Length: 296
Image (cartoon, rainbow, N blue to C red; front, side, top):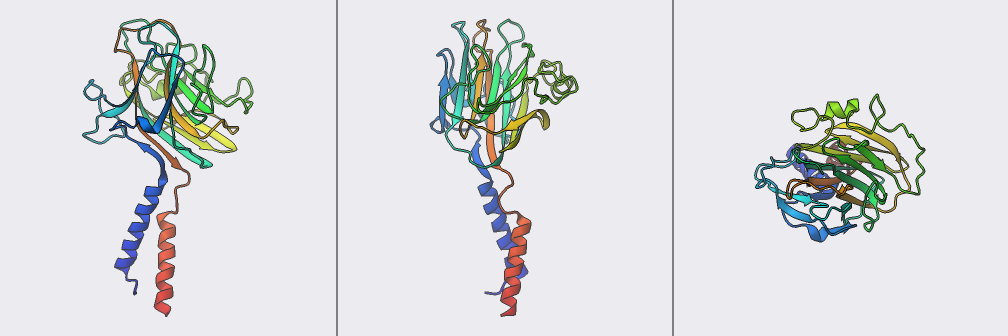
């Protein structure tokens, strides 16, 4: 077989498609009910996890990483009527064993600004065990590494992170990446990311879409970022498992009017770093093969 430039280009394109197909460890756009791929754990019964929920019909705009015509997301609620502290965590059942990887997910925190009972914590995690609900207080529970955040700056610590018990992170770890070194929504980095408008509450991701990314390198660091800007960085090691998670906790007993407080996740992806063999390497390999065949 003679390798011509056209054949070389075709093989190169096929190699690129193959590489891209291998890149995603997890990819869920929640357009259908994907609940079979998740294990949902909770410390109460006053909430739901609804997969493939039509958020467009509820008046929420299209998520930033969705395409026109998409409608579905994962909708989570907690403490909707019973006035109890409650958290709910959905673990994806696919093990993430890569030593370097990045998680990305779109988040919408629906907040009722007209009532009390508005402070809830979304939480997203990696390296979890699949059986422990993630909650940063009342009581503190969880597994792996996860970040929690409020939608309206209603806590004294609106952006928090948790590490495995097997990883001792010193008290006062300087991992909050803003000049005031605060966990509160008043921090300069949070204020710059979540401006009003479009966010209902400056410094918090309420009532508008945000994209959260988690970049993890085993034995080194884990970095949490919103809309491309890092907010927290700390040691990454001593994991409790290899599962990623999405969740919501209402850690106060007060409640908002029914149907007004919930969190939606969309476009969950987890990809290895670095990606599989680059197009450049494929080109070199194919060019070498073509040259060898010409010498025959």
